[in-house]
Length: 263
Image (cartoon, rainbow, N blue to C red; front, side, top):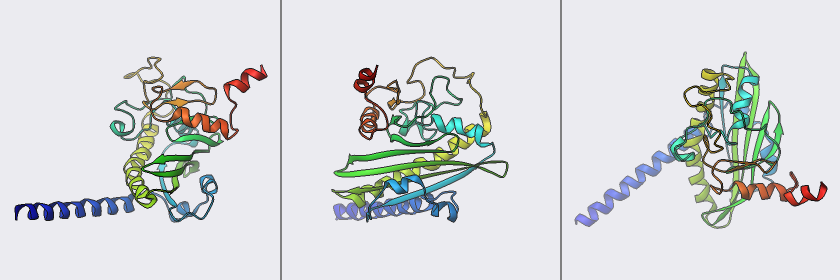
């Protein structure tokens, strides 16, 4: 009898947890975005070609009380050595993301690679699109795009970020349901992290409380491989090197052998 009661209690708890996760995900999948922003076409939409039954798209937005030229440097270094401005213990190994514009991070270029893929589109001052061409996860193959668009709005800036993706093989619907929940936890925190940094610190190039040490993994755990071949983050952490190779295969950057052959 006790075992049965425990099973019933565990089942009820599971139902409550799953229901809460579903409600939370639905409320945060389009956090801050207007209907027009949700309907807007973005470059990542074009990359996810095919009529996939598992396609998901999550559009979120925030207004920032600063001009685009102040906001852009924070977006340009996001995930490229400055951390992710989100839940540090979950996505940055406990490292604190930068609270200033880091001196040694280069301007974004096509082919820069990090754990979220490689940069497939760069419009300086306005747009970035990260692309994952196909990653194995939980028995499925996933494609993901992260579109970041910045525009002036009412004397400040409007930032819109869309995460879209699909999956094939394995259990794609389950995988994307898990992904939607995880992303919903992280994404709104990231938007607020960007907003708070920009509005509090502006375009400052130094953090007196946490000055630059020169270490390329000071602000970010996950590996970054720039189009030039230089690195930041901890080498081998996650898949920066994999997406660097993918960018070479896509023809966005040259391999080291091609560079040497052209010298």
